Length: 327
Image 1 (cartoon, helix red, strand yellow):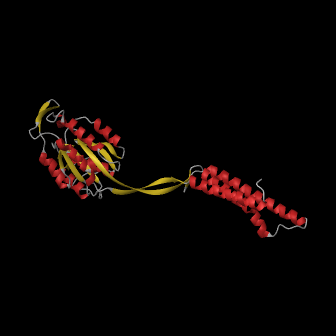
Image 2: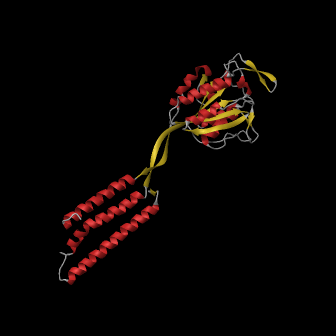
Image 3: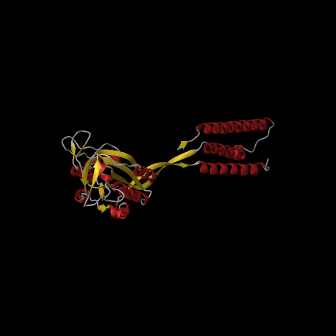
């Protein structure tokens, strides 16, 4: 149990102790006075009974002091929750207009629609990726934060799907996930309650981790698969493709359907065309929600006040019965 104002408790207990001391002193003086006159108070048992109301009143004051101090208990509360990382391709090819008004705009629209359909017990994070993953927003139950992160995305740079997956896994585990120099895959634990939704045209340019080793998409996908993280891919673009201007060059770009399907199949996920983005609403139902336990404060002041009032009332009633008078 914790106290919001321990000083108030100390003051209240001092008052209760003072009242108890005064009650004992008065009782002893009364007994001494009666003895000096040759009278008795009816025996020690009767004296204790007479003081019963006073002691109940003092106990009520002590309990009230605890209530005023703001007591609270820490109670474990369970919550079923899952995590979804929206990995958004913001490479230069996403400026292509074969999907109106552009691939990136279509991806952002689909992502925002997906966020709006998710329940409160799904934490959503956003990772924008080009060559190297850029973490935009960590997973949070505040879906407005994820929506704001999606809206401010702009296209620039090349694409590395492998780095995108690793950056998403880093956001899920809250620690940097990289491939070793010798190509060894890290063990990041088991995260079946997490899903990555990757929005991309599938155009891949081999990226590199901070360690300098090539980040293969297949190897990054295998890390996710071993961790129990499904990757649902959303294809943005057309198979016929179009040209885009990147750094003064005219480059042809088309939807790489095979690459995106390969990623989803390797991790137990599903491929969705952006034109059918409404199908993404079913992703949340496929997530194995984890049961997390957090400690939340439970105020106890009300219970202590009720107990104090009961003691004060009992003390008053007993005093009236024993003394025969209200005042």
